[in-house]
Image (cartoon, rainbow, N blue to C red):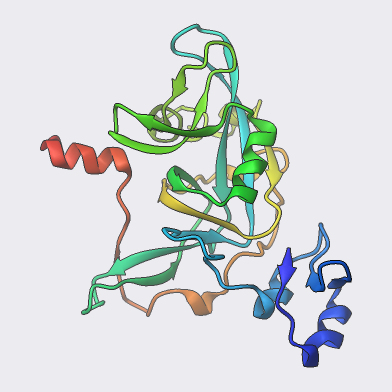
Length: 245
């Protein structure tokens, strides 16, 4: 991950493990190092990409086998798992101006119905699930990043993957995780979308680091006692519009 290190801070950054890349004339964090000590030198959170409302210092691309609903062949699907302390931009009940602010998320949660995804993050999912791409869904009447069958190309909708209990990314218990694998996202995970319920058994997924996380510090969380209005999923918004919920 690249850093914006002022000249006066270069010795401190180097002591923490940052490295200087002469060809690009910038400091960066080598793979495998904890990102938290370098937080003060992170670039602007949205990296110039509009529409981002989710971010996490620790996140994983999680892959799982899934039987395609159309051809019944086994295909690999992918999802982004955010560590406890991830942040989402929401409107809180005590935000009188209605503009919203960043707040800390609790527990391990999957991001889904992602309509905005920076290219470097998308590439990490595509590496493990080559048919992961942005597509228009007739069901939700919107476009989002979704999985597709590797055999017949059929869209594997996010509702069945992330909101259907017992689906690949909404496990009933750790037994549903036997064939899953997690790969640490390089850099800060950022996206525009929704997030699901807390996955209590997430640390049982092979590849997820057990122990203290490197996600956002408590200082970014909302004021004590404040509550927020969560971002509904695209499908939920469609249901409300149709008067079905």
